[in-house]
Length: 330
Image (tube, rainbow, N blue to C red; front, top):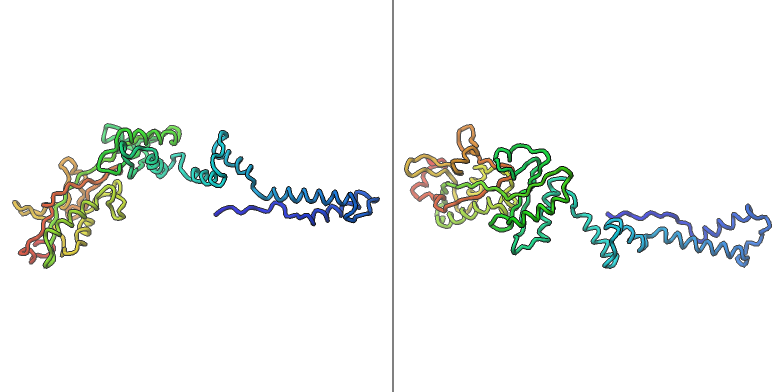
């Protein structure tokens, strides 16, 4: 909401001339002719006219005032290149842009602003950015990356295409953040890290459902749900550091038209139930179990995203003869 200009003085010509006449007896007892034809009254009316004009200008912001204000905002070397109305609009837009990085939102906004100067064809475009305080994600020691590092700020850059951001793009982000950071802050610009997951579930179809179509739809939904750019519940990309819960996978697949229910897949050789979500053996520490010692979630670190490795054959469609089993498959 714009500020309303205050009325600095509301005296009119009539007010000024009346006040001038009222002061005559106190200053000159011999001045008795107060008619408009008197030269003294003419001077009072002239001064009242000049004063009213000055008051009129005082209550308004002139073009010169606007230029002075814009020069204070843009620097002493600023000179107008466009009409003053356009110059004011550009100055307001420039003031709304972050020029200092204090909060995580500031770092992320300045990172995304690099898109305005980057060559999208050769350097790519930044789709997402994540700022983490007290983290040095450039440290080669994985344990040190998880240890609080006071004074360090790491910014994770996600490009808009299925590739890692180029070295030149990371350098441009670093160059944009350096002059905006607070004194003594050390900024690190890094690529995202992905945790690879595989999925193994069985879909029990409803009568007359097309098994091949169910598998195709399930694969598409899983890939999109965990996509770093279009995934997540809001379609804005899988959140950084968001653990993957088995219950969400069940909810996602159970909503497919033609699916009766979703259950765990059995190993055809041993008959044992397979986990719905699987990671590499070196990542077993991420597995979170519930009280029944069943898989509950796969944990992610704050700077990590999900990469799904999905073989369509891992989505099993229960044959007709298995429809007699209950939801647990027993």
